[in-house]
Image 1 (tube, rainbow, N blue to C red):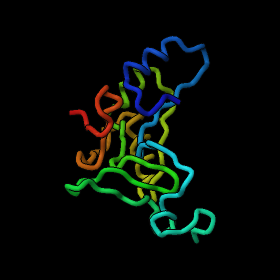
Image 2 (spheres, one colour):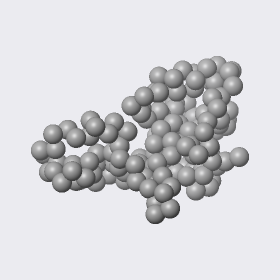
Image 3 (spheres, helix red, strand yellow):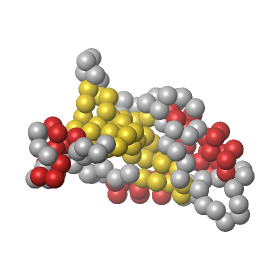
Image 4 (cartoon, helix red, strand yellow):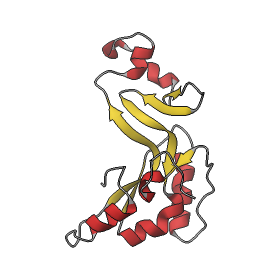
Length: 153
């Protein structure tokens, strides 16, 4: 799998040199995994030890949203993982993914809506229009060689 911050140009360049029969996968939809910690952020939020957290994460199936001082969504803390607040989506870029030589798309599930995302991606791969996306909630910057939290026009 290509690193999440890889642009189309990087992926296409690397895939041009791959051996015959090797499949290539790109992260195509979900909150971007940005960092991992030995400490569980959800347990820490409730001042609990990781080993005796009482599964408090179940109360936050999509993690704990962090905002900037200005109130803008910034990050999501989900157990031991720090994720992007915006959902990374390459649904509008399926043609360029194919052109780059990508064979597989990775979709990171959310607590709801994942089945619909999979259906819409399948339909778009089969020729339907890509799903409409909320520009305030999604991003695709890395694929376009820009900061990851941006949504390319």
